[in-house]
Structures are given as C-alpha cells and as structure tokens.
Length: 366
Ligand code: SRM
Ligand code: SF4
Ligand code: SF4
Image: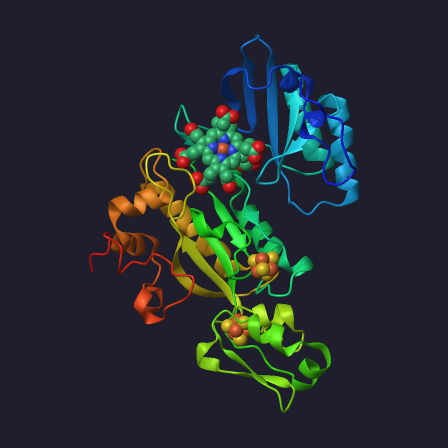
C-alpha cells in the first residue's frame, strides 16, 4: 500500500488520492479494453471489475463555472471523479453502462462538449482527438498568433472526425504560437506554427530605460545583437536575425509583433510512437499563411485538405509520415495541391532548428 501522506503542501497532491476506487483497486491489473462506441472505452480488470471511461473534448481554457458544472456532473455520474487527458479531453468513469447515454446528453447540454476522441486499434478505426496547443497570447512574450482561436476554428471544421471513427490511422494535430514550439509540433502528423517574419523594432529609449544590455545581447541565439555602450542600447544585424523573439522576451524595448507579416507555417509527417515506423520530426510544407482572425480560413482549409487527402489515400494503420514515406514527397504535393517552393528546401536558408528536409530525404525524387 502506497503512502499518500503529504510531507509539505507544495505541488499537486499524490495522484492516488484522485483515482476512482475501481481504478485504484485494480491498479496495474487490467486484462483488456474494448471501444464500445466513439468516446466510450470499456476496461475490464483481472478481478472481473469493469469500468467505462467516457471521453469529451474540452477547449482547454475553462471558466470556473464550467469547472463547477463538470464537477457536478462527476458527482452525479462518476462517483465524484474525473480526469483530464494529455490532450485536455475530460474523462468520466462509470460502473453502470445504462447511465452512459444520460451522461453524454447532460455533458452536451450543460457544457457543450462532444463525446469522442478515441480510436479502436483492433479494428483499425480511428477518431481524431483534440489539438495540443500553447496559449502564448495569455502569458507569453513571443506569440505570432492566437493558438486557442485557430484550434477552435480547426476543430469546428473537423468535428465529425472527433465524434466518429472515420480515419485510417492515428492522427495527431498540434499548434505552437511561435517557433519556440512549446506545443508538440515538432513531432505531429499535422502541425501549425506561428511565425514572425520581420526583425524586432528597436526602441532605443525603451531599451535604455528598461533593459539590461548584456542579458539582451546574450538572449540572441544567432549572435545578431551587439551592445552599443555609447548610446546604451543594442545594434541589430538584420541578416543574422531569425525572427525568434527571444530578445523581446528579455527586453520590452524590442517588440517583434507585426499583424501583416506574422502568420502560420504548416508542418506534416511527425510522430512520437515507434509503432511500425520510427519516430519522425515534422517537416515544413507551407511556409506561411496569413493571420486571419477570427476564423483563420486559410489555415483551416489547408489543415482540412491535408487531413482529408491523407485519409482518402492512406492504408489502414498508416500515419501521415508513413503514408508520405510510401508515396514520396512529389506525390504528397500533387495530391494535396500544395505548392512546392524553394522555401521548403534545406539549403535555401539554413535554420538553426535543422528540420530534416526533402532534399536530404531518400523519398526526394525530383
Ligand atoms: Fe495513447 C494506446 C490512452 C495519448 C499513442 N492510448 C492507447 C490506449 C489503447 C492504451 C490502453 O490500453 O489504455 C489508450 C486508449 C486509447 C483510446 O483513446 O482508445 C491510450 N493515449 C491515451 C491517453 C488517454 C493517455 C492520457 O491519459 O493522457 C492519451 C489520450 C489523449 C487524448 O485525449 O486524445 C494518449 N497516445 C497518446 C499520445 C500523445 C499525444 O497524443 O500527444 C500518443 C503518441 C502520438 C504520436 O505517436 O504522435 C499515443 N496510444 C498511442 C499508440 C501508438 C499509436 C500508433 O499507431 O502510432 C497506442 C497503441 C495503439 O493504438 O495500438 C496507444
Ligand atoms: Fe510563448 Fe512561443 Fe511557447 Fe507560444 S510557443 S507559449 S509564444 S514561447
Ligand atoms: Fe536575435 Fe531572435 Fe532577436 Fe532576431 S529576434 S535579434 S534572432 S533574439
């Protein structure tokens, strides 16, 4: 028996306090699971205990009122327990299968969350789960776009793939609001990355008043900044700048935002799991799309086109990376209708992030 006595009140409480009793009693002793319907997984323990896990999509940023509603629903159906998955879906635990439909109806009516986001690997039928994303606009210095806004627009368009199992394989979509990539975009089937395209504008007076010159210079990964000790500011070598915004994080005198030129790059073919094919880094296939709030139609349509082209042509269990590996990059660009440009080739402009690129890939046959 594990001790759950906390030594201090720092950090989260021990996870075992929050496990549903059926999960706690059968910890590590599960026999099998089956997907009863999209969003509902039946788990059977060696002891014969059964629990139904019911998954709902959440928008990740939740109001306190929504959290209260979710807790009330958990009290009513799930013995007071709920959990969030690593893709911020919320799951409830039912021991009585007759209550599943009522739970789904109540969650949809009270908080509007759809049931789904699962997949059935035994049948090769896959749903699309929630998008992992950052929220730089809430807390960070360098976002080039509003992550939550795009994610909402994309998931509204792809709703039917969340609530059903219509895809041939697992497909993970991610978004990071700048090239620092806090949001899993480095290795996702389809990724959206906010990008700046202009150098920071140096406000010498603000730099003088608010910034430490040495730490601002040291923040630049490419050595594009030099101190100007006479004028107590910094000098920027534009040719060396890669628009990362790190200097702005350090110094408010160097804003990098630009509504016209900031935008979104699309990457594809990354994966984390080593099933069938080794893990892969994502590769750029669209260097820039405009920031077009509130619904980002260009980004939404591009993501949808890639997803649906892959879904129509991939074999069962074949993820985006595995599909491209089989058909080659030329065919990928032909089928999706995306433009292949020199900006997608590694030796056009070397970035310190060093994507694996088409020119070095064995699948490059132009
Ligand atoms: Fe997963 C299998 C749960 C995130 C790759 N995963 C499973 C199983 C069947 C494991 C089990 O026996 O319980 C679980 C039920 C899946 C289902 O929905 O039917 C399961 N995976 C989870 C969750 C709930 C863990 C959590 O508590 O956070 C996560 C669900 C997030 C969500 O709300 O959608 C979860 N799984 C992941 C991730 C991470 C991510 O999505 O960012 C991955 C890696 C993705 C990647 O490779 O890019 C992941 N899980 C897998 C795989 C490998 C699939 C493949 O074909 O490549 C399996 C094995 C399988 O499907 O046979 C798996
Ligand atoms: Fe901040 Fe960039 Fe991370 Fe978004 S991806 S939270 S903007 S560092
Ligand atoms: Fe250096 Fe990045 Fe600032 Fe450009 S944006 S000067 S590369 S820290």
